[in-house]
Length: 242
View (cartoon, rainbow, N blue to C red):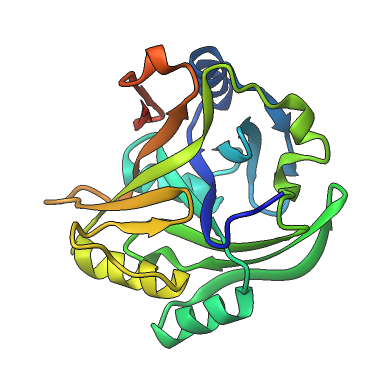
């Protein structure tokens, strides 16, 4: 199995009502939850991970007011797109590029055993990446995704959608943020200001005014081609079938 070298593998929506958002995603997209974790003690939240092809949408809900996700919801004024996880082949090199760009790492681990595989990660400070929470991820083996559970591949439902093929980030000074993220990922910025990684495009738009920076849209490949063009708003994030 060939696995892309640098790709958008996982996105996270943050909400005050996980159950409602989970039901809406499963109803609209025909996908299934593959993993739930007990993050109450470590991160103050609960979650659900849904397989979309071999990429993933996670929904998280803070369960204590002191959780970072709770502060995020307060700053956003409600539900919002929270995180973009980028899979890379060479995590140390990507982390070095982040440090060279003065991007702080707020959480890190190496070779953590999870659900029959292992993962290493660097969570980057959103204040240094344009307001959106980016993480750099290196699973082993590369086709695995430990956060989704050991048997996620048995629960793939691809009758409607087959994977994440794009995300949109709203940011103040979108071009500068695009250049920073592209540099960390080890790729270039296109003339259109977008960042192309394997299998997906990261678009950057000006947030404007007082609007908080965040993940604003997720593009999903429509395996049911009759549904191309459908757009839904879930957790104040556009879900677009392309």
